[in-house]
Amino acid sequence: TSTTVPEAPEDPLFSVMVAFRNDSSEKKIDLSIGAYRDNQEKVWILPVVKKATATTAMSPDYNHEYLPIIGLARFIKAAQRVCLGNSSDVIKDNRITSLQTISGTGALHLGALFLSKFYRPDGSNNTPTVYMSSPTWSNHPQIFKLAGLPTATYRYFNASTRSLDFDGMLTDLAAAPPKSIILLHACAHNPTGIDPNPRQWEQIATIMAERHHFAFFDSAYQGFASGSLDRDAIALRLFASYGLEMCIAQSFAKNCGIYGQRVGCFHFITSPATEADTLETVTRIGSQLTALQRACISNPPAYGAHVVSLILNTPDLFEEWEEDLRVMSGRIMHMRQQLRIKLEALGTPGSWHHITEQIGMFSYTGLTTDQCLQMREMHIYMPLNGRISMAGLNLKNLDYFVKSMDRVVRE
Ligand code: PMP
Image: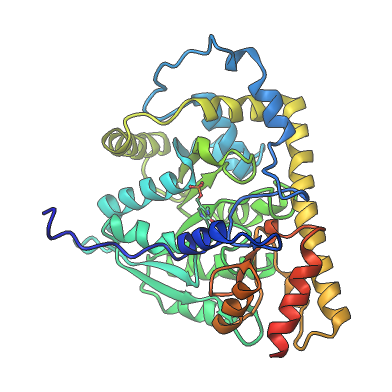
């Protein structure tokens, strides 16, 4: 094998990062990173995370024992309330089974494996297709394919209007075979930054219910997008209220700034319409998820889960977390406004309202591949699809970025 293994294609973001690192210019800007930076371009450790890690539980006496296979129970319970709300019927009715995972990626993996093994909607042996938005996070198709699930796309982004292709999306969801798996971004769609509005989510849920599709939500930015955990969960809670069978891959990487600790959760929610006894159903599903988790990772990592659990389960810390979320999302929204105002003030050709209409970590600027390459000559590093990480912009580098963007758009 050692002589026959072909080289894997490089992740396009990786080469952007290397090029940035090798650039010695003082003007250089990294807009490829998917992690929050403050106005001084610094990593921002959330003050609430600092407080949580300073408690005795995280002292040198912290014990490094294994967690149970499913993870830390009090973290899991609190994570359910974060995505579904404190008064959720799903939780009250015990229609949910959840496991702690290796952040959002691990939750997507576990869900993909479970569906690949057990989701047989037409009673045959055929594995159903997973439909994902075009475009989507580049890891999505890789994760689902690795689990053996065929993938396809539904329309999502209208490049000419730089907005949601809502008609295209609904048409494609309606045309997908009944009971297909539909991957949805709960909020702050990556890479476009464009989310359906609440009315559009209702229409999506209606079509999903009519077609008996299975909703697989990826929730990687709750609270980070709008600053409100509740607002960023409207799609999750709406679908749950429709009584649809669904699952959620939940990440605490961005909203707690705890990326490397790999804190996440996978939730499987059963429908109230399921005829079988609810408790028996979730127990059965939970047992299979546990068996899969055992074979994949044995036990999830403990430290980050303890930190997040402390935040979620301590009212004062929870409030402080919400404040930190407002700081991060507020800075990003301010950058969006300033970027748009400055482009409009320069009279940069084109319309720029999409910059402030988009939400979350990323913005699809609309710059072409050629324009992105020209930006690179000016020491500005972004992937060639024109996506910028808003967190890479700050009050120091914004003017230079705007001037450069103006120049490449006019050329
Ligand atoms: N889903 C989306 C849409 C993402 O952007 C990311 C992070 N880039 C993830 C999931 C997973 O992140 P993590 O595994 O770090 O939680």
